[in-house]
Image (cartoon, rainbow, N blue to C red; front, side, top):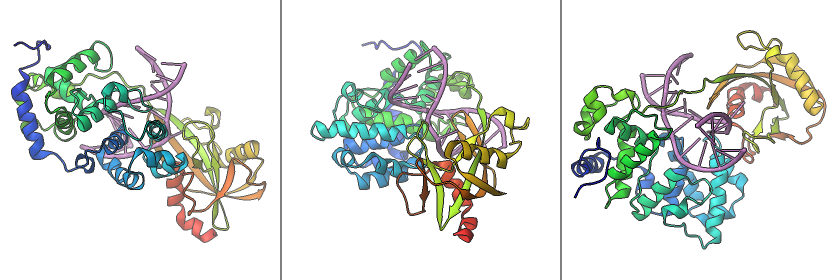
Length: 369
DNA sequence: AATCCGGGGAC
DNA sequence: GTCCCAGGATT
């Protein structure tokens, strides 16, 4: 019996036994691994998209405690979910999960079991569908996330760019051929665990790796050369000014109405055009820009006081530099999308950048309130 | 195929 | 500080 795998792929049976044995001995004790409930598995996988275990874990605990199943989440307003999600980023995940909860609730509260049907739900792509189908239902389908991509590319010494055809196809075929057909959930988690703990992007711990003897990249001595990824687009610097206006213990905030972060509250301010920046990206005249922006956008008249510490915020390919200024209002009203906000208001949530700026300015705020 | 999501961890 | 990692949707 000859398997129709890539020529570079070793006989997978011993390899599977070694990795599964390693996984049983070394797997981290993660909260979603004890559940087995498909909804909990789905929630964990959505949270883990683009997010590390350490960042996702507290959110998983809170969200599952508050909304233990699809029907419970479907019954909750989206704003409440977004408020719980605040700080984790990639808020589209939350909106799509809410839509999926509604779809599932309408079909009786039970998630579809098959990979192909999970794939049709909002926010569930090939990776998440495969993870849920294999972990919760034992379907023999390989889940390919960034960890798996790295482990498999190294194992087979894949020199193609794994994000483009045909490298992507070769990698998917190898991942599927390696999959332990009778323990697909454990297998998928084992590969991801290996990628997360030993087979890391930099400084992988090859001496401790149960697959070292099978690994083409290790044999070639160039493990860190895999996976081959496309060149990154360089980050774009953006300079903003923002006003911290406090009155009677409340802060003037603005509801963002356009993406990104639509539906979140932020400190009112503006992005500065290049003409208003020095060659190294600092505002030529931050206070003047702030006064002009809030006058034009909201008919506010400001008196700008002192500058507060520069806040740097890196998100995807943007490098934001927010220059906050304490200011007072000499005329104008907080009409929508502006509103007076107090720290006890949790919904809608603040953008992460605004929340951090306010947190670091807290001593000044208290003096003024 | 390319771009976007207003993040964050490792070093 | 710098580097660099990453699922799904959209067009």
